[in-house]
Length: 315
Ligand SMILES: Cc1ncc(COP(=O)(O)O)c(C=O)c1O
Image 1 (cartoon, rainbow, N blue to C red):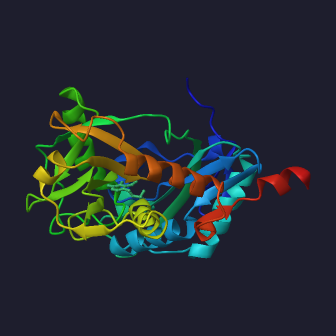
Image 2: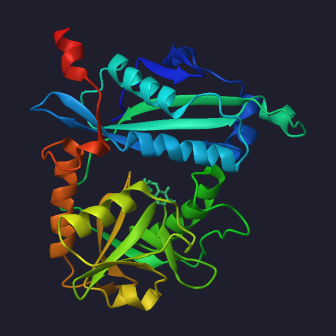
């Protein structure tokens, strides 16, 4: 069922009615190629009547890094973007799990191709997006025939929209072949990422993930899970280059990311991972992660931005 559009979005500093935020059709191609974005989630805590946005500051800081890398002028500070997001979530009365999508691109991008004076358009959208954490959802994966983009072609560590064609090609190949997701190797033949998500696995009680020079996005979820695995679960964590056969022999494999959250992978190239179900470490991390995201535990409070929806109602 189609979800209704929110009442407002934020566009270049103004809260704008959804239907009034239009651009000319000629902008579509070039604006998209040059765009960078963020994907952020807010989690609704029904008991506390509060929406908690996960690591909002870190996401806006990464948006700034992405903009810097593609040389987009930055007109709004991280604090201004945080305030805009909170106010937008209030105005749209987002009392459910919500995806927040800031997007920055070149104004009048066709004509700006040959200009050194770029002007940035910046928008923030919100959309309902339910969680699949702790629902029992699992995935099958295949190693893609597509390689992950490398540093000498495109910048994998930032959220450059054009990078996402790489993951789309891999995902559609995997799905046509009957798998749920792809896992891409980098140009060195080591494990990089899945489309829109990082890869983690457990072997002999250790949590292992490709390091940040393996052609992966500088993922905020990956960073959070590493911290929680070490601090709360007392696990040893290794960030290093990873062979594909390590995934075949792993006890547990999962994907992680803002959209992927924690997505257990129960087979890779039709080789069963562990006993073919979500493994015990993944389950523990999934439970802990959801508690942290929803503010069901006081731990890691510094990662949560409460939007203030409860006070918005009672005010
Ligand atoms: C290519 C790619 N890798 C990894 C991730 C995970 O990053 P994050 O945890 O910051 O969402 C994402 C975004 O979700 C992504 O688009």
